[in-house]
Amino acid sequence: MAQGKYKYTGINQDGKKVEGEIEGKDIRTVKLALRRKGIRVRKLVEPSLLDIDLGTLMVEKGLAKPFGMDELNRFTKQLTILIDAGVPILESLEILAKQEKNIALKSTIKSIVEEIGQGKSLHDAMVGKKGFSKLYTALIKAGEAAGILDTILAKLSEFMEKQEAIKKKIKSAMTYPTIVVIIGVGVTWGLMVFVVPQFVGMLQESNQEIPGVTQFVIDVSDFFQEYTLVMGVFLGVSLFAFSQFKQTKNGKIAWDRFVMKTPMFGDIIIKGGLASMFRTLATMLAAGVPLIECLDICIDTMDNTQMAKDMKNVKESVVRGKSITEPLGRIKYFPPLVNQMVKVGESTGNLDDMLVKVSDVFEQETSETIDNMTKLIEPLILVGLGGVIGTVLIAMYLPIFMAAGGA
Picture 1: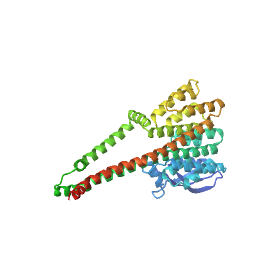
Picture 2: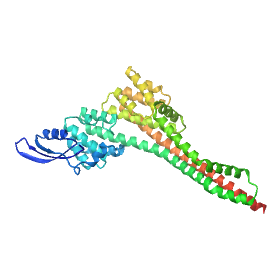
Picture 3: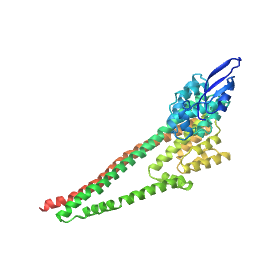
Picture 4: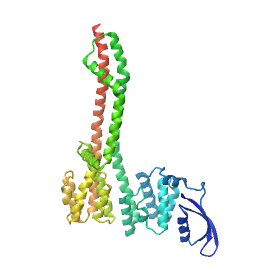
């Protein structure tokens, strides 16, 4: 049975008859919840179709859109405020579940509430739930153990905001050139398929000599008209094959290595990845999570397989008793100055604070690289597309100018 409101009749601890409604996902869960409230159930009526929580049903059937980082960050901030105000965790989660508009997150919070009601900790209730990363649950566990859950939640919120900010900036830097190129290719295709043939008809009627550049454009136009469908199918198949290849283990490794070596884009990927990794490390160390466990979680949460492999080597060295700075210094793309900063933090016992500063340095450099790349790419794309379109127009009008001059 799906989540819904169950009507019950029972006897409370005072021996009095009570009636009411309670929300739950099945009869067993509802009975346990009533038993915890001191109510012995005499009669329990399952929810009708009208009483079923459609949102939960959609989530169970996989029809609801999963919640993302923005929704999780909002939830984390609200939970921080409530706990900081002294509201118990269970009551805080019940409040957030009632007001949450995202169906998937609402259903997840309700599930967490039920498990906490059964005696589980917040960490145990969150583990395994979609949307809660290993990093998130590990920090919750550390916060609960140290009795500083509100502080940890505040750090988590700050961490997610910074992480999303750098991701969005990288995404926007990649998106703009892509959109401009697609539009430019579309305009060029339109010129070749619809505009150039009109001029060809005029030139054939005039029986005049066709310049070399004009003939080249006409040949390209003929090729586009004849093979557009074939090129479209080939491009579609190629993109599909490439996406499938990227999903394989070897394909992912090869692509990550290639991206890291590309000019400018590789610099952005490396610095953005290092910024995220060191902020993750700093956040977890500040929460009291052991360094080895921090490195394990960093490796699990890293998207770039090559960088994850390098961090595995760092972890293995730390396990053998070496400092973190020695294996970091062997990574080719890791700046020596930053490695020195980490070394100072490790020797002074303020590694988490120094890692925050290192992360800030990488984030600033990533932002500057993105800005410089955008400033460089924009004029190059515009000049390139303008040159292509200008060449087509000149090639078409050149015979007309030549005929007018000859006349």
